[in-house]
Length: 223
Image 1: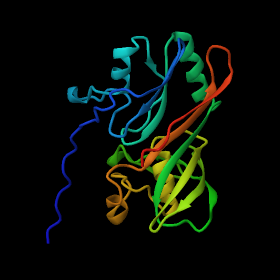
Image 2: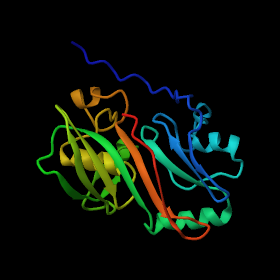
Image 3: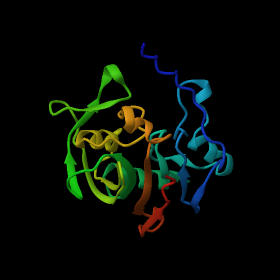
């Protein structure tokens, strides 16, 4: 039986809800991004629909501070002033905030928690995929804990201490338990186990750009 070539990617972001607002004030905007929607516009004209564009239709001053992978859902913060953009941007740069993610992974880790400290770099011939490289990779650290053990999968909470591209996806793969539905890193049953990447940005805790107060925002994983 001949292997079928993978079907070409067609960008078809979800339309409902158009923009799920978690919090809005004069300094920042928090939204719950659905899986399948870009954070910022892609290079092709047909890839213009994104969080940034949708936010601008309701909040003309909203500006992107960080990104989530298109396939990842969850909490994102946008700045609503130049001062807030600087303040929030520095928090990401200096790792002064905290993030948690929920993921469904294939198989069962031996331990109930652990730490993955593996440097990452772009797998250039296969971009946008990333890979572990001890020679030229940038430091990447993820802590994890098992929340629930199911028949063939585990629900885990992930605590990224760095923010490398595809960090959680590659680290779970390196652990031997890829995130189900991951079209880049999962194969076979692990890929087929979910119609979407089972990765959700659950919470974001940061210093409010107005007064520095520590605040936390959270959204529930839709899988």
